[in-house]
Image 1 (spheres, rainbow, N blue to C red):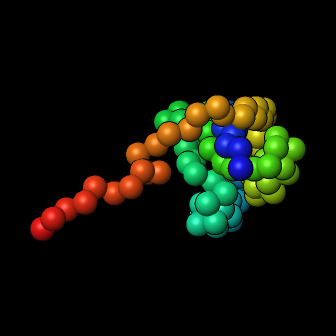
Image 2 (cartoon, helix red, strand yellow):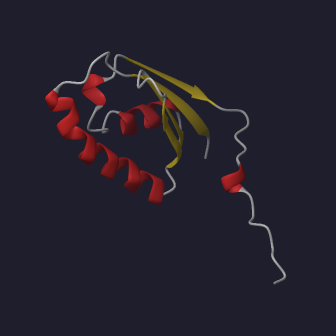
Length: 99
């Protein structure tokens, strides 16, 4: 299944409604992580952008999942790029210890 990186633009300020949705949003993200649909989820230190690395059949399927994010209506811009290579330490076999 192809891997995509989704770049999200977050609002400049977070109102009470946005903040109230964060726990539900995190629960949904955690569910997708557990199901291995999402491989990585990151938010910039200044909280202006986010990146989600995820699997999907195509861009439309990925966009449909992102549209289910509880914070979706607050995203100013969404870019979806299919990756040619996605390699990470988390995807590798653990080191074997002979102890």
